[in-house]
Image (cartoon, rainbow, N blue to C red; front, top):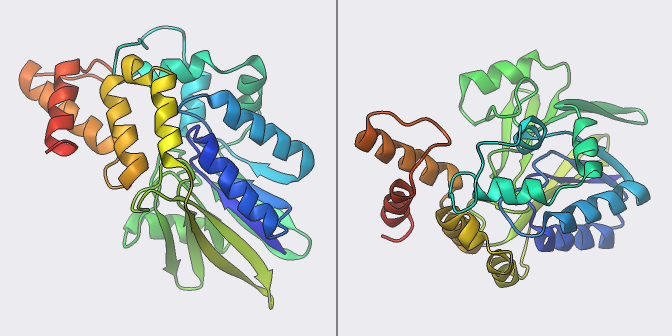
Length: 283
C-alpha cells in the first residue's frame, strides 16, 4: 500500500498538479494533506478545485494548517492591498468561496490515520499541539512531543523542509512543501509512504515543474501591486528556495522597531520591507 503525503501547497496549483500526476502514475489512491492549502500565490481557486476533485475520487485525509486559521479568524479589517504584509492574505481571502470556508471549518488541527491492521499514524501541520509549532531536529521540545504521542510515527509540515527526525524507535517525517519548498532548487516536493514487509518505507520526492509560469501568474493576478515586497520574496523562493518569507518579515520588523521604537504586526511600513528585501534578497 502506498500513500502520498503533501503539505504546504500555498496556492501553487501548477506544482500541486505535477505532484498529483506523479502520484497517480504510481497507482496511488490514498492521500494525506497536512494543511496550508492556499496563500501567497495566484488563483487559489485552482488549488481548491484540485483538492475537491481528489476528495471526490480518492481516499483523502485532511488537517488544517496555520493558513487555514488566518481565513477562519479574519474579521474583515486590518488587511490591505498595496501592503506587503497583508496584501496577499487579502487577495487569497477575496478569492475563497463559502464552500472553501466551510471546508476549512470542518478540519481538525491533528488526526490519526488508521488503515486496516497497520499501526496508526499521527498527522498534524506544525505539531500535534499547535499548528504553528515547528518540529525540528536535535530539539528538546520535539523529542518531548515524539515520546508523548501514542503513535510511533508523526507526519508534519510547516517548516517547508523535507526531513526525517528519529528518536529511538519513533520517527517524524516532514514531506517538505508542494508550493514553496526550502532547499529544493526550485522543485516541488512531497513524500510517498509505503507499507511493505510489515513496516513503513519512505520516499522523498522532488520534481521539476514550470516555475516561470507560476511567477508569471503572480503578475497576472497583480500580486506585485497588491503585496509588492512579499511578491518579490515569493518569486525568489519559487526560483531558488533559499530565503523564506519569515526571514524577510522578521528583518522588516527589526528595521521597523529600530526606526519607530515599536513594531506591531501587521503594521510594518513599506520602506522597512524595502530595506529588508534589499539586504536579504537583492544584495
